[in-house]
Image 1 (tube, rainbow, N blue to C red):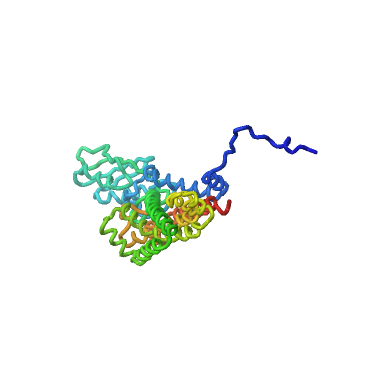
Image 2: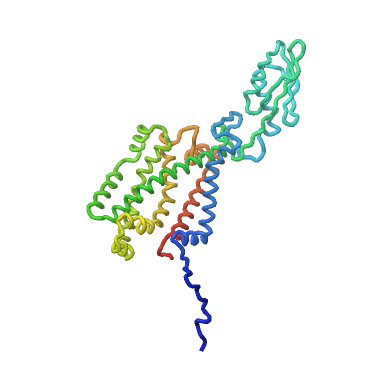
Length: 379
């Protein structure tokens, strides 16, 4: 008969088997979810774009280029070669000079002009005010000052996503809108998470009269008209976006509280909770170590839905003039502007919509992955 013990590796004396913690197991399960990991990578890129993108962009999000209003997206620099001379002639007509010769050599504009009267050297300001030309100088003047030779550098500008209806770079505005939208979503969701989880878990675990009173407070807050409340926020906090959306998050916690309360009621009579009570663990310890960790799945899913909800809410408030104010912008504001210019400049709607769609899909896929990783019933 074969001795089974001879085929079984023996553990050394005093060697302890190292187990996995809840978070280690959840991280391992999350890494197996390819959609969630790709979504996490996209969100990291969004965060980097929101933080560093406006600083790395060649154009400031508030800079207006009157010569480039609603120019389409292009990899080629503006102005195009065939547009430089007509633009220069259009500007020089204001100087009332007779253009004898005009040509472009590389990035340098060469102009020969004359007049029946003495030419004022300050007329170079007409070219300097244009977005196309810079460093305008007079290189040669006749003895009677009635003819001059001017040169100017041609400013080559690239607008990878085109410009908006005011002549501002759309890429720079999308980058700063990602920062604003993520900041608004994170602030409001963070406040809703802290208040909602604490309120709902406490009400569901204590039950009785305490639960009844706490949930009646939630019902009263539900009855408040949100638009009126938003107007009051602007009156009290002014045009401060951070303070206003922290206060908005303090209203959005109501759904979170109800979700957590329902989960807590179903968990408080489970065996592991009763065992903790029998061992003398305090109510705060049970909530912190047993109840709240087991509600993380629904909480995280609701967070992924709350962030886009807050972003859309911000768009609504901005439309009413209560949210983000110029020159700042957000993805919702850009989409609203793009919808108004959809026929003449469809790219103004397409690029912000793609940015918002990718953000929402990433949040949803990551939320699903986190729910599967943290749900104790799937282990």
